[in-house]
Length: 245
Image 1 (cartoon, rainbow, N blue to C red):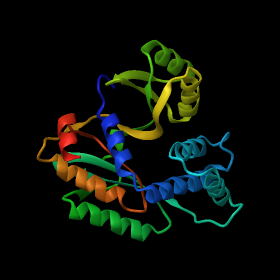
Image 2 (image 1 turned 120 degrees about the vertical axis):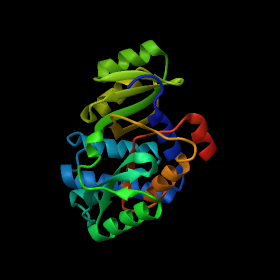
Image 3 (image 1 turned 90 degrees about the vertical axis):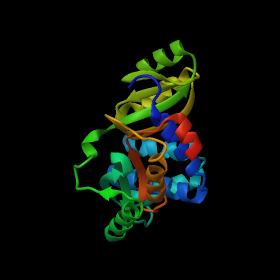
């Protein structure tokens, strides 16, 4: 990754869309429950849970709500068993879509995702059709001076640090996200965003005519309760994104 990354643009836009606080909280809580159920309720021994908890804290989810979600996931309280499913497909313009699902009803999730693709000029693909284009990585968007960010990130175990406008993108292995974040915070670097995400290996340029169609499909998918996250490899120019938004 080099230069200005559209991923920062995508993350910024998604943050605005997730302003519906109740829906965002529900998805964060579901992620915590799923992580605790699959890896245990101790965040010190479960990196996925630690990341889910930190993400909830960053979004101001109350502490007792987080604790109850962990308890449900680890079996200390009654809870729902969520199944993780990945759907793959294409948006208009040949943009690859990789959709993470956490659901307690596989049939409902499949029907809803298929309908979203069909109604928004997309094509649902077969398993493996686009997943190979994405790689799971820890991703931090940070603000600070170059030397401080670079040294702290590398000390924490980061794989790459690149400029993104007036910020820095810090990439790591998913399991190293917490240690990299901790090193940056110890160096008093401002963390603007931190998450385990799916970064595309290639991107597809999208023009002004196609961008609204792509973003409508993203919106439709993100609005589904069972959809935890939508990853795409579109490259929309900043000025086009501003006009569409």
